[in-house]
Image 1 (tube, rainbow, N blue to C red):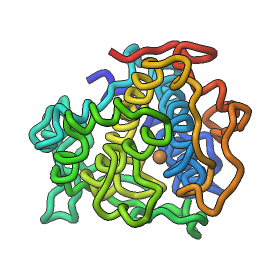
Image 2 (image 1 turned 90 degrees about the vertical axis):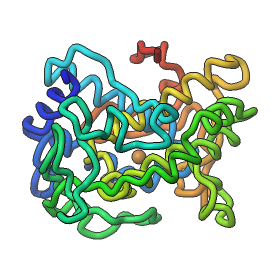
Image 3 (image 1 turned 180 degrees about the vertical axis):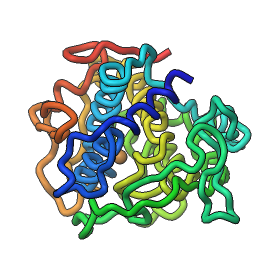
Length: 292
Ligand SMILES: [Cu+2]
């Protein structure tokens, strides 16, 4: 409940981004969505996904604490617990302690139950991955938080066996593919990792390539992505901890320079730029966290 209150608080806190350039930004949570949107083409389906989103959710947790007096930690969505039936799970059953339930199919799939019932989201949705930022990306396009939850994908790709398989990845290339999506277009349609499956299962707001952080489920979903990476990294300090693979281009194509520990990531108004090296260990540098 404290977490839900803190999210509401962020939605009632004025933004930092200027409204002339970012007309859709109406509150602090929108700052996070807008930064995610601006970086989306360079931090997905490539070598930057894990590290960039680690910092992104860490910055969110910091902001909840510093700006909304949140005393807790960032919760995560424990995929295998609910993979077979998301709408029956305590996360999405629509109860007062959930992140709200499924959308109402008779009302444009708008979410009408739980703490985020009738919540307004401010950026458009429906975008798929593209190499270029779409025009009018930051325009004010108010509509309802919407979902059309379908557990068929998480049932297959986020279950306990899939998570074990993910954590047994022998190297970072395999881990990335099992987490997210294969780099081989031939298998895209039938093979997903739990990262992709979670976005697709929620559909609607959560499925937009750019503006998905508008759904309060996003941060918990990425909490679990980061938890998986954290566990995998800690399995083998020598071979997993500093393992990097890929570029900052969507699907690593066209080919751009390989990431190194010196590659810098930016986080706009959310925080200072950081090198890849600073994002590789949750117990080093600015970070001091672990997963239970
Ligand atoms: Cu993302």
